[in-house]
Length: 290
Ligand code: GLN
Image 1 (cartoon, rainbow, N blue to C red):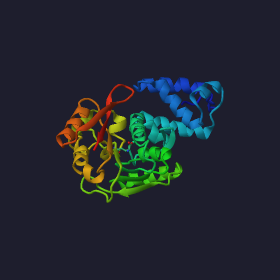
Image 2: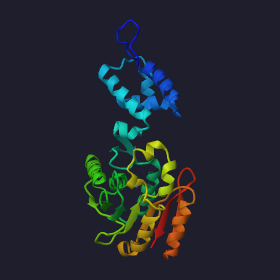
Image 3: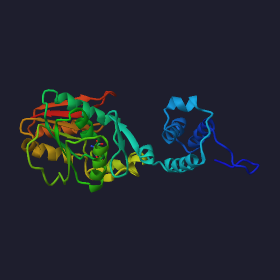
Image 4: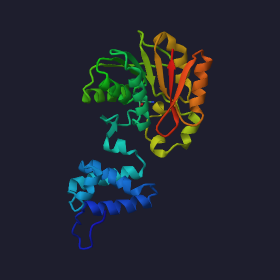
């Protein structure tokens, strides 16, 4: 954003910023340059995309411009939009998003869908979530199942701190958050259902993922630093103790990952297994009836 030639600071209208931003993000090699500037503006001005164009002549005030400038700089460095604005929507609810935890993904909404579907006949289910991160999955389930009793584990204090904030802002009163290293410990009690979107990216694939993910999201939430199967092995090992008669619902990765997880459970003696597709026709959820 430059100063005009006569030395007087130029005023910037929404439409001028969109045009300038589109060019700038394009120059910097972004795939959807217009979308980048639109998203930042929508958040900055608290407007819907359509309103940006209805109010395209509006002038952006100085302090907003300053904020936008710093946001653009961060985005150019490939920081994810959700960390820049600090917000994300998941399952129709609003969440705070910080580098303390993984950014909730739209794909993971499928995990919530299947969980809620499976709980239709249980009015007060006992639910265990492994690796709650931002808390998005447990909070979305809690929102639709206020009489459930939810225990949400994470090894990361940082993540749990964020999850607690998100639970509070979404008015959830039925979740207990607990710091635990699930690979080495298990919680007390029996549950009706275990749900998890565990760290499943194999360590050797981390280098090839997009910079937004690789450089900004907590590594511990992305990978188990091995083959991306450790959490599934652990769940297969302790699942029957924790959920003697219930259901396990797990998110799985792409490529041959779903099949690997399926085989792992099969070999551990589980025989009621179902791989469920997402809306992109990828198998992304494994449902196991014990
Ligand atoms: N449960 C959280 C989510 O689905 C965190 C998952 C994780 O950290 N692997 O976004």
